[in-house]
Image (spheres, rainbow, N blue to C red):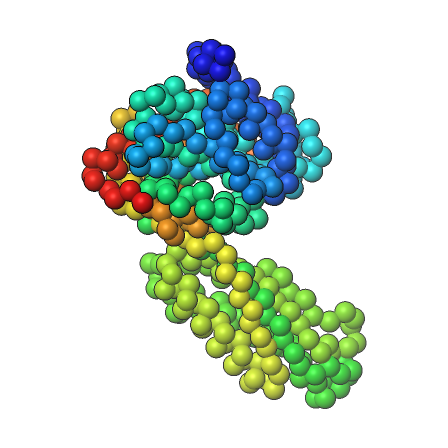
Length: 393
């Protein structure tokens, strides 16, 4: 029965995947709350006898299609969470959930990789290894990849590939490059302590607002004077808090912000220089300050060999392949690449409002060819691993 269902799906694959895409778009769920999304994807996989692995995950799925059990293992990853944004499009399948929206294309990612799984399933009997499909929760909260990794399900994976749509490229455009495609994303807090006083007697105070103001302006010189002009890096103060009334100099102030880098050495340099400046400036005014650094996901790191392989396949399938970067956005796919070589690949889904915008849209015409690409990428990567005599873990 499952074979008949699969054949029927394959015969009408474009309509099938567009229908799934619409359903997913209509029913978005926030990071790590993707319970109905998980159930839907699991049901769609099981109806064609694709094995869903039993893992200690509250949301998210890893499925596998196993051919030769002694062959290599390749993984394909997509993300499944949405954003707390009120949709403002005119789509007939716009979000039915108030205040939630698939405004980053994760619904497109899911439909695409589901289609790839259907296509790989067709050839299971001749598959020379195993393909694992990761439907990852919590990408927007940057903790989903770590949850998948912690299960150990990827310990035997030889190569991994991920997808992200881009909203400023036409359908048929593919972006990829060796090295970093997205940035390391870190958050910092700065807690400043001074001495409060009446605003009429500032000489009795050590004003934390003065300290905070000097820190804000001075930190910007790290990018302009400590980071080379050809390097990409960003330091932004995004939150300032200090005092609560007009005639009192407060005792403390608080700053918060983000650092984005592509190079691990620059990431370390900025952290070091920030700590020196924050403590030094506060001390110069007689106060004190503490820098608290919260490491986020590292930069993605595409391996040259898999970029070359992915590029050649893309061109063969008619994609206009360009060297591309998503900029300084973060992507927790990078956690997989710390231990597994592979490539993160972008595909054009039509020019639209930017990601995370309430009027963001995806051109559904991009789905089918992208599914075919990841089908051939998975099966071709298995052959590539064997041909190059990669050591299977």
